[in-house]
Image (cartoon, rainbow, N blue to C red; front, top):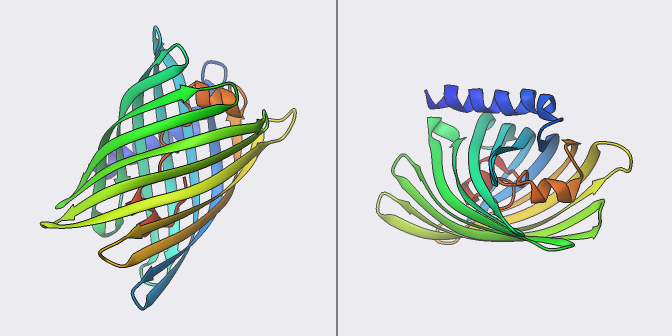
Length: 256
């Protein structure tokens, strides 16, 4: 049932997004990613592809609803071929030069598990920068994942967005607890007089007590609608991309 719901959310966002172009702000993108996982003496290389989409639209008054979804394909040395879906719904309110709200998301993990996450998020807008903060709780089977994180984005020009992000997580599995963290950078460049942009990113994630580290790289292209790169930020159309999940890096090798 959860898989059906995730698939429905992903399809609605990815394929209906361009139809909202006149009334909303968002993007649809495709990307290639590569990740290397080191777990003690064992290494695992992952290569994959991702298609994602996001739509932010006014709901009522100063409130905004944002839908984002992604479909992923991963080929790893250990796990072979894997596909996954993820989706989220955000409800936020714009207050002067800030935005506050919450979200609920679902993400397929290997072995048939689904990570369900609830969280609070906020953004502060400046002339050439955006600050984002997120706090969340996620659960999958017998695992509990608490995460806090943030991103700082700077617009070197209206067409060039540079960002750095970091998050800290506490993962409890069957009574055993471990700390995890993720940090990364990315850049996105929008081509003049076109709705297209290209981006690249790098994340490093670690689960300390399990001696697991993941280095992930991603490059992609996006079709944007409703405004430029900074308009996406201010409309709430980058929510869901700003802070990476340690488990997403571990199992999918994805960069956000």
